[in-house]
Length: 172
Image (cartoon, rainbow, N blue to C red; front, side):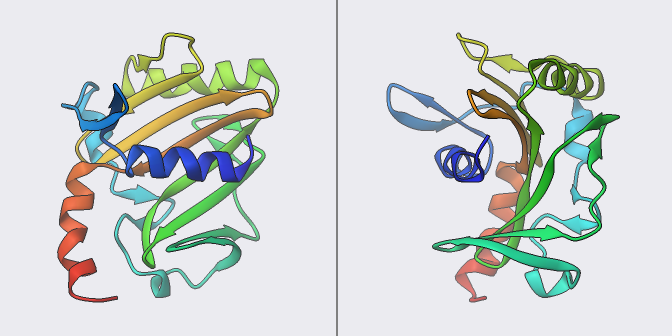
C-alpha cells in the first residue's frame, strides 16, 4: 500500500473512531476488547506527544499539517509478523499514529489480520473484506488491503483526539 493511500485513509477516518455512512463521517461506540484501550502510543512514543520528544526520527514526507517520519534502525515486526516499513505520523507536530506497510503478499496480510485479532478480538469487516477495523476510545486500528499491498494503521482514538484539542487550540 502506498503511504499516500494510508494518509488519505487516516484523514477520512479523522484519526480514529469514525465510520462513513451515507457520505457522512460519524463517531461510533467502541466495538472491541478493552485491551485496545491500554494502547497509549507506539514503540515508546505516546499519542499526542510533541515531535521534539522523538529525536531519533528522520523526515520522510510532508502533507499539509501532517508529517511522516521513519527510524533508521526500525524493528520490522509487529505481533510476530514481519512488515516492510514503519512510518510515524505527526499531526500538527503531535504524534497521531503509525502506518505499517505489511507487504503485498496475501498470506502476510492474513497473518497480520489473525495476529491483531488474537490480541484485540474480532474486528469489523467491510462488505468486500478489504478493510478490518478495531476500535476503542484511546486507539484505533485499521488493516487495509489494496492491489499494491496491505497496511496496518494504528492511530489515536476519539478520547485521545479530544484530550489533544486544548493543546492545539493553545498553540503548538
